[in-house]
Image 1 (cartoon, rainbow, N blue to C red):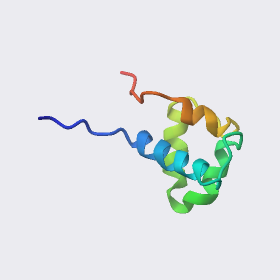
Image 2: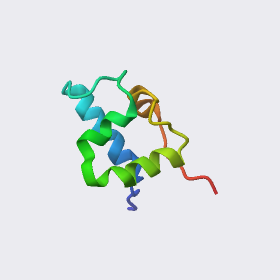
Image 3: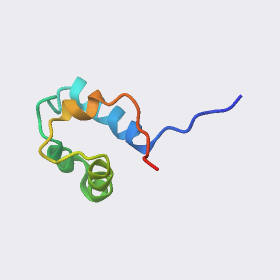
Length: 73
């Protein structure tokens, strides 16, 4: 039995979804608001988001709408 290793963005997506469900964030909030919650780790997550062509002005619902995280190349 082989286990699939989750992409790091799946972890972020689950955490953000949980924050939306608990009303800490709204789906219409911009991605930059996540920075307020991630502190020192934000530079890593910002780069990951930008690598997937996200802008910090995109709404959080765009992040939550992604079904699979696959690297190009």
